[in-house]
Length: 90
Length: 385
Image (cartoon, rainbow over all chains, first blue to last red; front, side, top):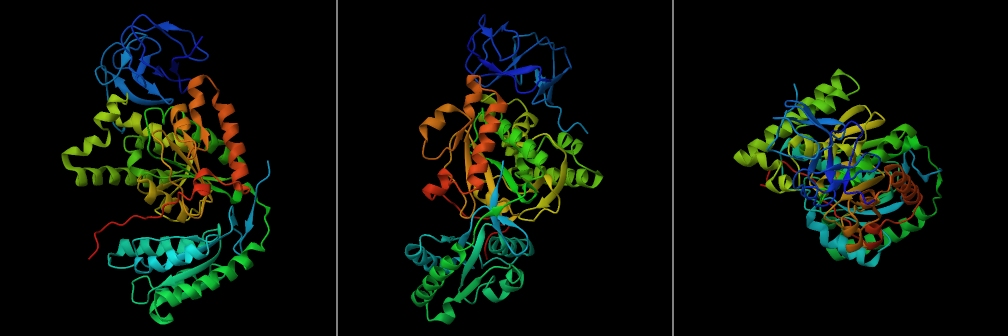
């Protein structure tokens, strides 16, 4: 099967789309289980690898890059509409 | 895996053995071009500096960059061409280059009878120096004597996923080997202060990181005003970047995951080994000059949109983030990290990159070297008078 998402770090809860993925299509990453995508995921954008609770950390590169502003389901698009910057974490 | 280099008097090793034709000031760039036409085996640099700026910081950078080019381990000998009345004239520069431990021949246009006569004398001197320098043989070089810089430029949405991740994997491998790895581009660290500080080897380094990133943030706001937010631009957001931390993570990834042992100033030579940060600009030309001045003998350069740039005295290995730019610019790209998107593993790519790096250290030319795509420019803080 062709891979269409890439997971950068094993801790990550988001993957990166390598091409535009449409709702209903499967997201397939090397070494992990395929799942259905729930909405349009533009190429190079993030998709939730699993259900993420409201206020949970968004992890990419194995690091916290943001915090979710609402619950996000596996297969949903993850971007500025459902996360906020957690700038500098002082 | 054995690497070799040219041993210098001070114990440094060069991955190249260049004769450098260096102007102290832009006024003599034409003389340098004449020399270059006649002695293409030497490496000539032209630049826009050397006079007309008087601020303390600009003078510090000017003298540091010029003198570090002379000191650079990849340089076996130097033909230095000055004018005479410039700020960084050969007399003023001498104290900071006299201990370089390599042949230096000096000409000043105002003393040698003008530009043509100077060029003539410098051509003879350069040819003689090439003969002398070419006699030196490569010897085995310890990994501890290697400084590799990791740079990215002309990035795309995949740079942070493929090529920078690959650079990071090579960085971790090099640090493990005992080598030094350097990354710069402070503006690209904004938003990752908390991550970098966690990795500092001690309190002092953490403090320096904090100050450096805060200053970059402040300066960005001062220069760009309300547009400072564009450091993460609408284009970045369309490309899938949601936060500045996400964008910057894709950049600092190049240095791998190890502890940060030191922060150095622009062009400063690190005292520590392992991973070192340089407080410097992200702009490709200025950044490479700072990394080179710090003693990098080789640079890995990750690019997604595709840039041809190299640096005059050191090999720059170009790593494409996607296969289409690798195919579109075959004369400029050395290796393709886009294979990660086709299912290849990071470790396989890393090993290919290490193999290429070793060959390049041992003398194989990079694309930028073969094609003469070198650029030389360095940063200033104030406008000229």
